Each structure stands twice: as C-alpha cells, then as structure tokens.
Image (cartoon, rainbow, N blue to C red):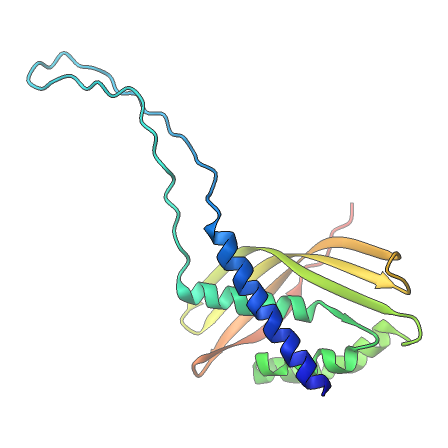
Length: 195
C-alpha cells in the first residue's frame, strides 16, 4: 500500500516538473534591444541607407528532447531524494530504487542505517523538504552519461512546522544510460558555505 502511494507521489512530482518546465519555457524572455547605427558614405553608385536604428529579438535555443528528459528525471529524483523525515525513512530510499543504477542502489542500501541514526527518534519529527529552483549546469559528455547540477531550496523542520531552517543547496545528479533507460548513478550534495 505504502509503495503504491510513494510511486503515485513520484509520478505526480514528475508530471508537475514537466508541466512547470513546459509552462516556464513558454514565458517570453525579456526583450533585448540592440541598437545599430549605420554611417552614410559618399558612394553615389547605390542609394543611401536611411536605416538609423534596428531592433533585433534575441535568439533562444530550444533544449533538445534528450536534455529535457534528463533534466525532468534528474530534478524529480533530486526533489524526492532531498525530501524525507524520520517518520518515513523506511520508504524513502527504497522508493527511489527503480530510478537508480545497480551501483547506486547498492550504495543507498548501505546508507539506510546511517540515515536512521542521523534522523533520530520518531517521537520528535525531524524532516527535510526540497524543491528544485533551477538547473545551473548541464553536461552530456557522452551518449550514455550526463551530469546536471541543480540549485535547490531546502527546509529542515524539527518538532513543529514553525521550527524550521530554510536554505539553498546545490545538488549534482549523475545520470547513466542503462540499455535504453536513463538512471541515476549518483547524487552529491554540495556543502553549504556559511558566512
């Protein structure tokens, strides 16, 4: 029952991420005005150019379908991977196994005990929620590997909803193509630098 709920939640998050990405890309970029001036020459063989200023719209490239797919998969994974609590950690990593490579799954299985120690007793709620704000770096060095870094907004809650700490943290998600399917090969939180 709980696995079905988690799977449905992941599907809803995926669809939400796709919708946000699609609607976010339909917004027009702020127009940039480029002013060009032309100088008239004394050449009488052609009529003088009477154009003084022209405006050119910026050229925006549409991301490739593969980049879109990778970004949606990786951002959905990053949000689910960064959102957990001591009251749901039993299902937290196991619900993400289908999206992981075998090596990542093996690593995650070894982390479950550490996660229980870190989050502590279930009697006092301790959890994190994570929302991807933007992708800051995208690399596709080969046809079977990818690396995407996201800026996320994370909220840590302890005991009550008012006892929270919110901060930005980057995460780098490594993707690997296994057969015809992209899977997560690694997820690495960039340490938060406090000033």
